[in-house]
Image (cartoon, rainbow, N blue to C red; front, top):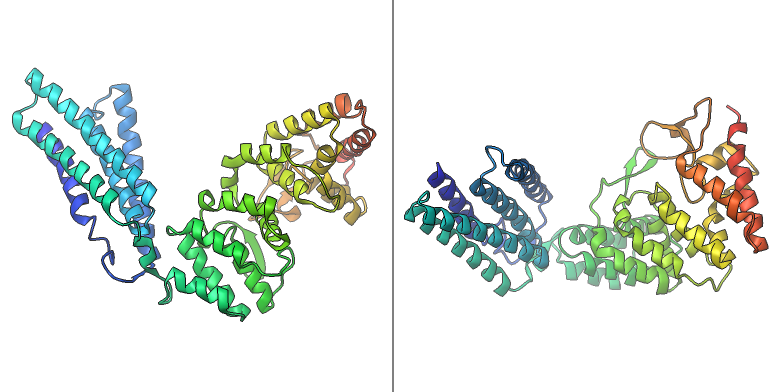
Amino acid sequence: MKRIAITSLLAVLFFAVQTSAQEPGASAPGLSLDQDYIDLLKKRIDVARQKFEEIDAAYKAGQPGGSVTRHSESRIALATAEAGLYRLTGERDLLLAALERKREAAEHSLSAANAGYQSGTVSLSLLLDAQLALAEAEYELKKAKTSPPALARQFLFQGKTFEQWVELLETELDPKVRAEAFRALALFGANGRGKEATEVVFAQVQAYDYFVYDDSPAGQMKEAAIDTLAPIAMSNSFRTFGPGKPAIPLKDSFPILMRNFKDGDVYQQSLARIVLARPNLPELKEYLPVLYETAMNWEVTDAEDDRLSILLSTLGRLDLKGEYVMSYLRNAVKTGNAEHFNATFAKLFSIISMLEGDARTLITNFGFHPFLFKQEKHGMGGGFNNFTFPQKRDLTLFGEELLKFLQDEGLESDNESIRETSQKVVDALKSIEDIPQ
């Protein structure tokens, strides 16, 4: 049984080495993006990960089926699947990391084989197989390190390379053609060119307000640019926030997005603002500490600049427990920073003004936090019509904490502006039970 397992392990490694230069189209001068094949590779990763997690749990619990050999084999299978995807997309750093994990698993397997050989439970033949398996893994890693990291540049979309689409954006004036170029960048960005594609998108925003767009050619071009970073799916005449379209991974775009949000020109800031304001980027939760620190260090120099309120709205939308929001507010009250404190509730007050006190919609769309009171959600997407309001409207734990904080500390602040804002928000929260059916 052990010989079969080691042989199986060796076969996995040998297959990976043999196919490392045989991915579909990998040696061709131009490689068309085959999204179906990429999806298949991602499926391989999902299956391999599920198998590894099952064996890993048995391994850690000392259960049957969790042997060292099976554990190493499942680790190698997962790393092999990951390497297959990253080799195709040209994501060099991820490829090298996957191959290093594969080498470590093979090394672990050899260590176990050595121990078994010393104790007489593993034959010399099996030990030699494990040694060869490690040699295969080390060879594949060495080969990847010495190969030029230019595979992603071989991708084509509609017969054009990444560079040709970039050149088209730099020279083409027709908004319809430019919209198609942005869509191409989204696809390239989703397949290994994320950072480069993001830089191009922000370099090519041109003189447009990205918060305003329609069905005109220019409007569709602006929407295509936004969709490269935060896509929306279309359903009939309604826009629904969600994946649905290829987009540049947030891990590639976020640092560039924040740089343009803070330091870009007015048009680059406009694009960054609407991307942060879109509710379909749950991955932003990984960057809550960065958003929080950015908001904490933000200096308000222009009363008309709404970037801080957008930043705080994004922070609160993702911080469902309210930990970062409450820390931010407490610091603002402690330091008497009315600009920071008031910006937290800016969207709430804009809704008050717009709806002339329509409390029901006001509370549903509460500026920086969407779940201040308990409600049942149904249907697709977000928005007022997708909520069922119970007879009794209770604040969430966060809503209760916010109300108590405002009453105990906000209303007692030495800063008059903070006291006034606190009173307005307290009144809004207390009005929940008075909302008509």
